[in-house]
Length: 234
Image 1 (cartoon, rainbow, N blue to C red):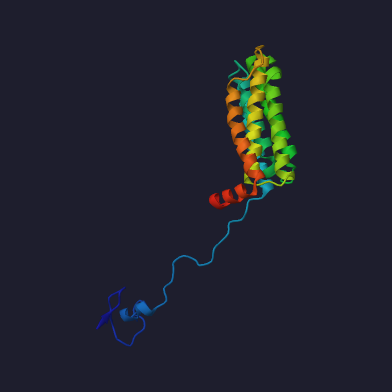
Image 2 (cartoon, rainbow, N blue to C red):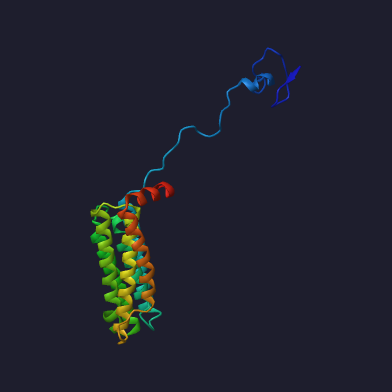
């Protein structure tokens, strides 16, 4: 004797479904042989990729609206200082930095790095209106930005034009770090009218020199290179 699992009506053994509620009648002994099904779809769906143009429009609207509203708030309400220039400068940097991703994906990386440096320069120049002095900008900030952009351009050129490996990239990187640190300290000494000398950057130069000599030694000997590749798996 069996009963419907839904409505409880008594069922005959020959029935394949409940005559009252049409619930299928399943023999418990046949459950193991039935094909198991998942409640989730078997086919993998794919979310539509957002168009680059849409991202560019959205980012431009957000950055533009932020810069405009902060400038308006600074002009009409909190007009004690030009604090809105700091927000506007950050919006400019964000917008320029995302140009290669959203607006011009085929923009040469060298132009992109130059544009990023110019955007940072514009931002720092805006700060001069808040500090009411531009001496630090032209004597220190601008030369440091120029140094960083030049090093970034040379590093990118070496990575793209010269055959490189993990070791050669590390060689370029530590060389760039040493030049940047030494250049920044020289510029700071020049700005402060101090005698040009290396102090903290000399420590960085010493560490980088040791690493550079080690890397050059490894790169110049094939046995060292092969042994290092086998052990570090690169």
